[in-house]
Image (cartoon, rainbow, N blue to C red; front, top):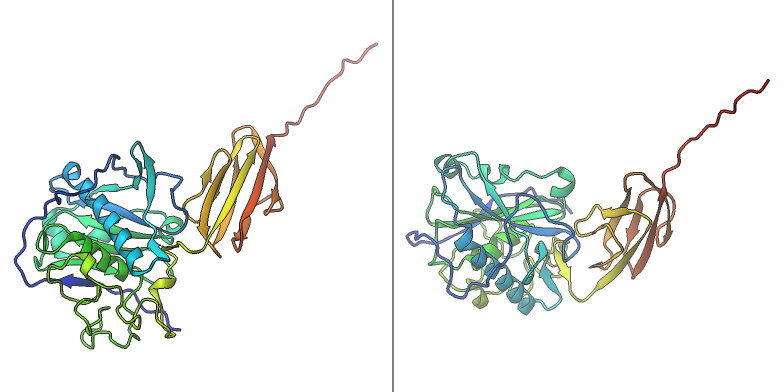
Length: 352
């Protein structure tokens, strides 16, 4: 199967722009925005990170918008599971005082709003992440700055099987005429790699990742203000989700949690050290247990504390280096650390 090139696609509305305001029923968010990812993640695996972004001369509205963004994520989760009880997007969650909520990131760009409005790529370039992290990450970005086209609500692009991918919600475009959760879900599906060009109901022109057979389809190119709950995830299951064709199926995306098939990984730390995984979600300084999609392939890397050395693994992992696991079933691994060896010599006085 040919891998499609990532392409920008979006959702538009033929109505005038109104500055978006938080809905009255926004879920309270009790966290603090950070410029770095907090670890470990609550849900392990490839993650969807949520970012609030403003241009250099933008107004910082974190305080009033964070709860609305949290509400969007919860709305998308609920809607997705109604469409498919076996799947849900794997948002990056962390533990706060009120429970598990979005680990939101704040990005203050160096470019002014007028420059960003002229070139949307400045938004994705503002996301700075090491390749090792970015390849496992899709980004849902709430951009709070001026836009070139007030009738374009969002934009998205992404490969099906590797990150990064980007879903952008333009907060100063279509809202509140179009619910932000609707735009976020639409652009997130673009970031996951849909709609494939091979889909039978893909819009004939332009070929930009939409379906044109059903206005209730989430991936219809135009928004009419309908709430997310009134839309469908690939009605007919024949274009981009849960289909029987040979082209890419979003239902198989690694950025979705397999609610029907999870496996447990228990890591025990013996001695002083830590264990982290290449896939996001596991960072154990003490013994810990995480759950993963069945079949997930991850590499565990031990790191001894100062003055310690890594001895070897026991259990599901063997040897004295990194450990590659494919979680077909529950597994237990023990990382054993010990004090570092020191070379000592003695000198005895010569008698005589």
